[in-house]
Image (cartoon, rainbow, N blue to C red; front, side, top):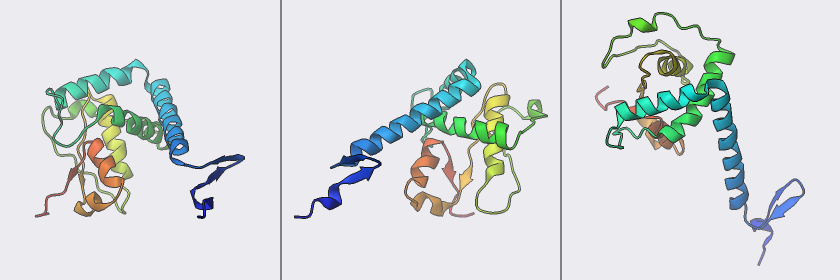
Length: 162
C-alpha cells in the first residue's frame, strides 16, 4: 500500500491528514479578517450588523440565506476594497428612498466591482444601514463555493424570465 499520497508536506511539517491543517489555516484567515473588520470599523460594525439582522430576519431566518457572521468577513474585504483601493467618496446617500428600491449600476465584464462598492457604501453610510441584494446570474448557483458565498451574503438568483 502506497501511503505517500496521504502525506501532506508544508515546509518542514509532514502530516498524514491535511484536513486539520487546512481547518487551522481557515481559522487563522477568519481571525485575521475579523480583526481587520474590527480595526477598520470598530463597534460601528457590530451595531450595523445587529440592526440589519433584526430588520432582515426578525424570526432568525432570512429567505435569501443572509448570515451575519459570514457577512462580517465579506464586509471586511469589501470595506478594504472600497476605502483603500478605490478610495470611494459617498455623496447623496441621504436621497436613497426608504423601503424597497432598485439600484442599477452599469458595468462591463463579469466581475461587478461597482456593485460591491455600492453595496458596502449603502451598508456603511446609510442610516439606517441596508443590505443591497444583487441579482446574480442563474448559472452562478451551479458553481461550487460561489453558490454558497452568494447565499450567505444574501444575494438572489436572476429570475428565469430575465
